[in-house]
Image 1 (cartoon, helix red, strand yellow):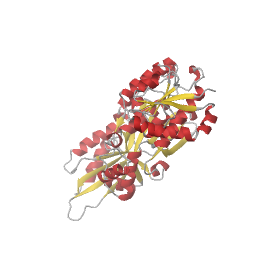
Image 2 (tube, one colour):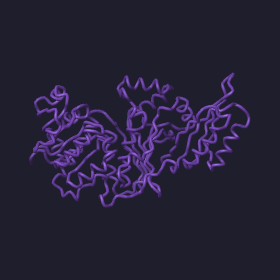
Image 3 (tube, rainbow, N blue to C red):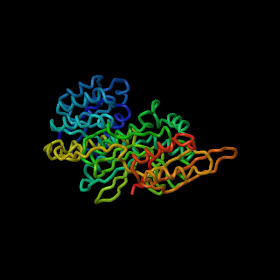
Image 4 (cartoon, rainbow, N blue to C red):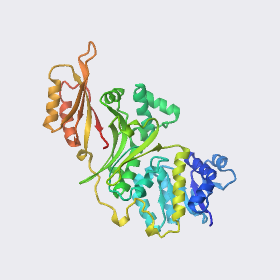
Length: 436
């Protein structure tokens, strides 16, 4: 059969990896796809770098629209990133009748509803396995492998930068700022790491997974997002003493009244498998009503792990290119006319257990006043850890773990506690998930 022709928009780290994987594994890929898949054209502003990668295998241009306009191109792979020109080019490719593969989680989390609707109307596919968790096939698992299940919740370590930082803070007892600098030196963190350390990157990915799991539109603007910049080495240490580890989790959970969609540092029991995912690795836990708990683990970034996902999408599209559009797997797993109107819940309505660290005066009656406030707001205590004050000091740390309660009650209790003269610093609040 005639080879499928692919146009690459951007040939940086992932694009280069995609070219290499396609070339190295061409026989296996042809056998699985039923025909050859060839990169026929590349667009990149750095023509010299692009030609160093592809050689004379295909033309290299600076104008991405030349790729889209090329009648021989069947699939456009968007690896530019960002919300701006990438969105324009993806929509233009769809309008031209091209299938699209993208690794752009930010684009899909913010504009996915518009892009998927355009693709559905045109009868083309948008594939995006590489947009979430790099080489881990979590999108395929949610859209197809777990299709018999009513998904109850998803919890994932889906940002390698923050997981590397938290792992180093725990193992070496270092503070956040020190480890961040080391992560940048080693290449795990960007020069501007804001999207990673503030939880935005993880929220993009959690938004996409929530849409597939629960059949709702992508709604990044309604996600609750907290990063790891306020975490201190003391919190890592106290969590460890209580039998927990702290990970930045993206969580999507179905409730009767809506969907929780949140990203924040989370205490996880140390014996859970996901709590032991270290370094820059990613992992996602999915709870389905039929299958129970499943875990997906692997490299969440890098040239060839991400290229693995891009090429898998190319193979999927190649297999299905001739199929009736109405009988392909829908972009977000559910048929467009079967999407749910379940709302994303405001964070105040979310239920979780909590870790509270209070810096308090070392004097009689403090613990009693704190526990009274919690009781007044119907918040049950699971455990208390009170440290002895250092010699010559008149203040100490008080650590409280609560049972499951509503965020609104915790907010009200914390506001009341913060007004006590014996509470000497802002209260640190982290959420705790048993993931069972």
